Length: 497
Image: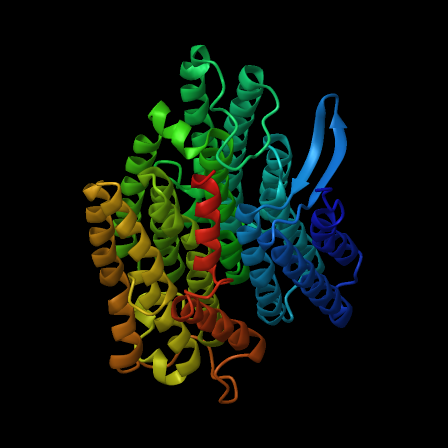
């Protein structure tokens, strides 16, 4: 079958060209900038819809351009990549609408949205990369394009956060480069292949492959915020709420987790990785991160920092699903890539709603806020219950498959990790819900009322949509094109010849 060469490139260009054009839009040309943002996001979503349908029916989409001698620039659509692309394209549109409302009247909006689009371009390139070199190029572009978003406000706290972010992510990028160069020296050019490409490498190279795996995971573990490489993420919460949502649900953290999925499934292959003995330590590291993140979340009064530590814990469910080994655990880990994104972006949208509307940043300030902002707090409640694992929200589906996979693999310790994590999730989310709905307001809010409105429609509507998507992903999990249905398709292609 001859591959379609244009669609992967067009999907990347839809946000790249949007970003480049926005840089040249004047600061007061609000309507032009918003139109460019929305046209680019909608165009990408339509292109992705076409490609999802094609990949489901095993149509090939591949862009291959000369890059270096004996090395091509490769963009390719497969089931794994399309799961990430689909998530990113839907959430880019919603985050764009949210950011337009959130940044209304603020300075440097053209700069913000220009880099915002470059960040999405990088994420799309990571998802569609057909080999490690192409992946690394977009992975590093993601670091460079998100730094201006982290420091957007220009305060001393923001500049410090940006410095910490660069120290961590550039170090991780250097480790990733070392691992890729060494791997190419051992195995030659390695393209992403279902069930991996290294099983046929001579046993004499297996010790080297062990070391390379550790280096690659360390490099990717920075953006994934695995312990002890997580320190940048809570610090980066000084960024505006749309940036925090982007970091946690769409781009940086997800890019690291997706990279680990690619290494385990499409470079090494899970069966070969299991024979090398690298998956069990990976699952242990994920288990430690899950518990650590949850414990640290308990101690945070700042709402965004509590959500940040929650992300450190929740994203490691994806890595745990890889390490457990088996199709059921794979389904749970891979589907959580989407489910966590939907729920966590809802929580950060709600945090932004509170900050922009009432000036609330701390959990201790949230008493009675459910009566003042009922729709936003209803969305927060749905997402928080989903993070705990309460049915029928999407988080329950992820935990069910991870737990079932742990039982199938006879790794009962992982089931214990999930149980402890769920209890800790409840311990740091349920007190917030009690404050929101059952405690009386403490007094005047830090910001004045907004003419009786709950919040700006551009902030509220995306929040409600992502909350509904979190609920729909659980209620309609059995549908063929649901995140769970797509995760089952990925598992079938990774484990069955």
